[in-house]
Image (cartoon, rainbow, N blue to C red; front, side):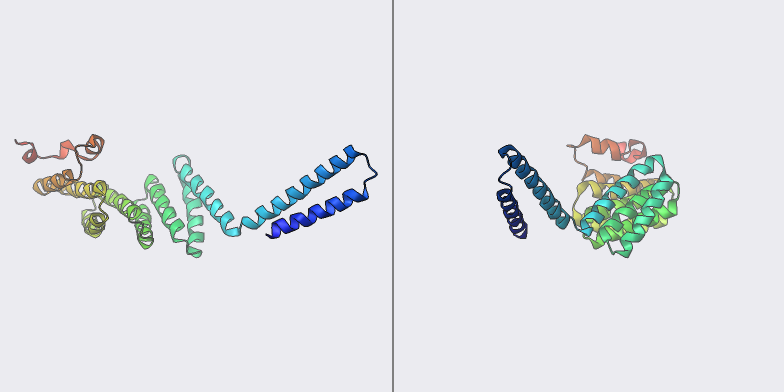
Length: 236
């Protein structure tokens, strides 16, 4: 409302000025009027835009840009990606920005994994999972936990792996995403297979098949490892 009142007052001043300079030629009057109106509109629009762009919006846009840059740097300069993410994480935690913290922890988990720092990678994936849990973002919570499970499996840290599986399994089942549930069963099956507990491994693989429907052959080819199926499953 204030914008339009201010604009009307400006226009009144222009028309009053127009009357005072009526001795000028019509063409000059017209150009003067148009130029002045353009200036007024530009000033008012600039003022209105400045009022809408708050510091919070600017900060959010800045964070999005920096986060994207850190993501891109993982493949070209992982050390720079880590440093940038750590600085952003410190600020996010200072501002109690849980959502941004969750994303940055996840990004640091990926970066440290690429940089072969297993313990720091696990730490950040775990913190990402915890943060997403606080946000009730169950899907991303499970995804971060699965990243932890896969690292623990690769590192043959089976005791920690078993504990983490027991922790995330109820959340995954309650969430009801068949693909995530199947992944937990398969990781558990791989753990038993590596421990040469083939019967237990086969049970986990069979359980995963209940969730990997025949409608999605790509999922099956990605997650079901035929080389790890013992002869028990191969018999007619």
